[in-house]
Length: 381
Image (tube, rainbow, N blue to C red; front, side, top):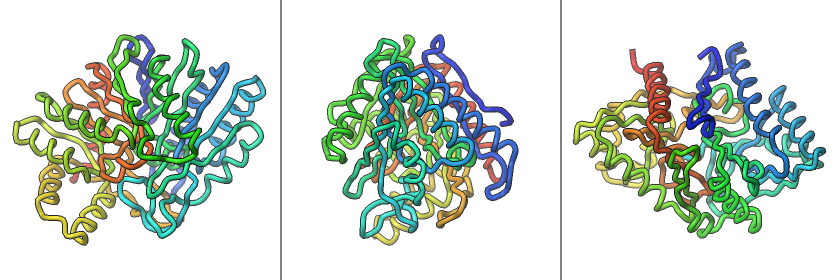
């Protein structure tokens, strides 16, 4: 993918940017530099159009180099222009081994965490933004969204699977979605205010914050966790259960029993299943299942599904290594696209996450093409 791949739908109301690993981790790569610059362009352009407010809820801010400089410069310029900026982030860090479904996330005696470094980036914004850590007990503020001018008619949301890190923009498979719709922005604003006002994740965070709106005429359903975890899982399962013509999947992990079972049943119905997953992340899941004494049925279901998916051999997590995870959380079921920050795992249900379902053939076709290209790239030869 030599150029940043961005597609526009619904007369420009929905814009999608697709990312993939460029070059080899640990080695300089011009294509990677270009993709990181392209993502920076997209986010800077989104920020630049803000007139009154920018609310950012981003899990990981380990952004440096030219990309970090440009984001800081643009946020500073918006603040000087009178735009109110608030940044909610997940504060916990640890260099230990990752918990599957939580990105480069770990479970320690002190709770959950990610590699250190975000604080260095956030310090650069201390004079231009209100910054608040969102804490959780064995839970992550795992969102990746920005709300622009949330109270205005021209409000927009930028969301997806993409953290604010150089690896996320240049070494991982990720997607960014920009949606221009005040009705949708209102749902995101509710979620942000719950996180911001409490400063922590509670069981009720996101509760009742779900609904369907039209974005440029396209139906888009949105929901937030942990409050609407059951709603998200049900929506994903239902989309899979009604699929008849295609089921295209890009999943960092798939440890959710209901979602795995739904894909297995789709295979039994003869629905074509294609896609990819992150190999080392799922290896860790399988080891944890074995250690916990979970019955063979769940592992067998996964192996049945995995036989139809390509495996990305990412670098297993270790402190200081590049993070080139297959980071997507996508399902294309006929003409429905599921995307967001929500990994298809049990752990994700307790996090602060967001998911949307887009019901549109053109959008689904674009995601289907993207995922199948990745599956071909990582297919065994």
